[in-house]
Length: 453
Ligand SMILES: CCCCCCCCCCCCCCCC(=O)SCCNC(=O)CCNC(=O)[C@H](O)C(C)(C)COP(=O)(O)OP(=O)(O)OC[C@H]1O[C@@H](n2cnc3c(N)ncnc32)[C@H](O)[C@@H]1OP(=O)(O)O
Ligand SMILES: O=P(O)(O)OC[C@H](O)CO
Image 1 (cartoon, rainbow, N blue to C red):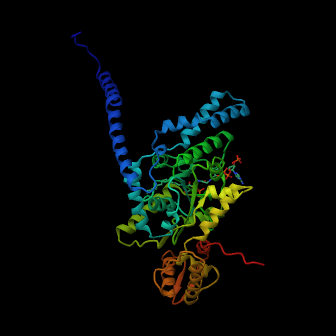
Image 2 (image 1 turned 30 degrees about the vertical axis):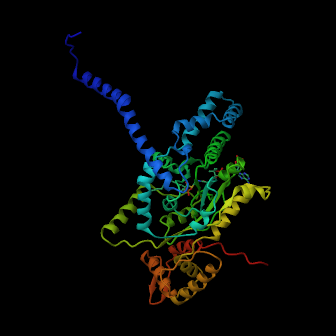
């Protein structure tokens, strides 16, 4: 018992490492986890007093519990059996596939990360890049039944959309986004999950995957989780609004329980400078239409941006405007009787986004240029006329300065800084490679009304 034992140093080190790991996993990690859990619970309790729409217990459940709940859902269990039969594979293999899908989809949520860090970062990023303007938020949200599940429905212009809108919504609630498979890569994947985003695949979908995704969306909706969806399903490549993808909307409709209404809040976003504009335009001209954004392109951009800031040469990218439209109550929408509710809802939501799409000076200037104006006075006259028109049709119209010529000049200077135009006295020249950019911004204006014949 008390005899001395000799052992090589490497074996002693190994022994100590094992002992340390065992100690940490049995005593330290649980208490550290418990410590953070307690802190998070206290934070959630405080937040839920302040937030208009408190964070739902479902969102705070442990990720493994939600995954188990999802794969033991009766509809998923049936889909597992059907999938196994369809593919001629054993049921336990199909079951494992369903579990893999559930693990891929289900998020966790860290209130500490979301409200403590991400929202501060989102506010700083939004404000330091843009002059942020918001309209219609109070009116849109005031009349919504507090028991209803709210789904924010946004047009997709830029990766800034969710940064901006999540920060703006943080006074009301935490948003859970449907996030494309592009963000599954490390380190984005775990980060987005911890911010409550659930992953969706946009291609290679099979019946089992669809069922797992559909049930996740339905269970979250039934449990009151406030969500955010980009119905266009991807970034607009040409600046115009795209037709709605109906997947998520149809899942929500299919499981609608009149006892808990679902209210869709249209949110329209526009920028005077979309950070990815040229990448999107290039994607629009590519056969695959995929965005060729590489990490080193982003790193180079961030580096140049940092240089501009450090040398005090950075000026903000003009306006970023967010506007809230008229909400749609699903209960009332379905009550009106529909043959294709998903298609009708998708169209109605995009129309309501279009209805409140913010009108920014740079877009009006680009519209004039795209129509052939090459003189500052003509551009200014166009801006004045079109601003009035859009104001009359109920769109939020933003002007930095009152005089149309001054407003037009601010936008023209922004284009000049990018070398998208040259200004000689009052004459404007557009180098050919920049024409698509001018047309892109012109298309960010609300959809022109089709004249009656
Ligand atoms: C600095 C600090 C930052 C802080 C910040 C914090 C925020 C931290 C979060 C990050 C946030 C990131 C945010 C990323 C933003 C994106 O990644 S956007 C891209 C991902 N999101 C989306 O795509 C959402 C909208 N998309 C959908 O709903 C898609 O439809 C789906 C679900 C992905 C499926 O894809 P799909 O197959 O292309 O879908 P679709 O053609 O619409 O049809 C699917 C189903 O719809 C149904 N359907 C279709 N048409 C109809 C119809 N007419 N009637 C009835 N049903 C129909 C059917 O059930 C159909 O299934 P089948 O019966 O054919 O099998
Ligand atoms: O536009 P995509 O298809 O590249 O999807 C990327 C995401 O929508 C960006 O948020």
